[in-house]
Length: 223
Image (cartoon, rainbow, N blue to C red; front, side, top):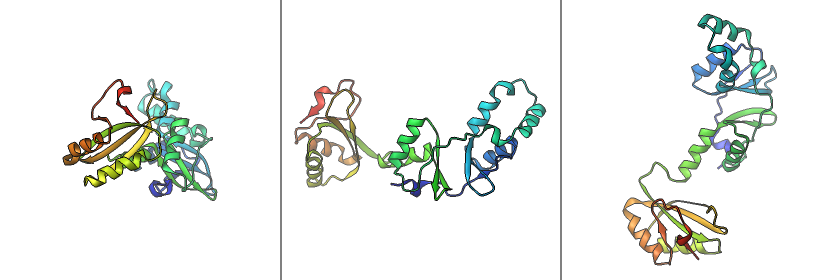
């Protein structure tokens, strides 16, 4: 899936000359956490989050009265505290790549740019939601894990066996097994009522099925 399919297209923007109080009101009224800062030409020149505002007010805010704090917010403008070095993506960026960028840079949102103009924004929550859907979370499924070595045909063998037994795979993901080189976890989800049949089908292939937490996975690795 691509970022363009999940990005928020209705952008709430703010001018760098707007007061921080105006920015806070925009964030609160629209129930969002980020504002794109644009100039008169509509070009993005920064980004501002509620976290940026709190960070800049963290020290003095505790000693100010409400009146004094509102005065300070009116005197500060967005351009003073916005993040100017903004990491962006394009609509054809994959969700997986967006997730890596967010994690690597420890950020919570990515403006989406096309032809030099902002066309959307995608957040960490949006990306996580897609990945959770891909994993089949929230559905009444049974979660089963098998550990296999990275060889051609292993996935086809499992899928073919489950198909022959009339068991549908609702979701399937893989990732490298920590501390076991060349070994991957296959995490499958099948309907609850097919749980035992799926376990027996995979065990007939010589696989050992993990259905709960185990600290040591070495004895579950199958060729």
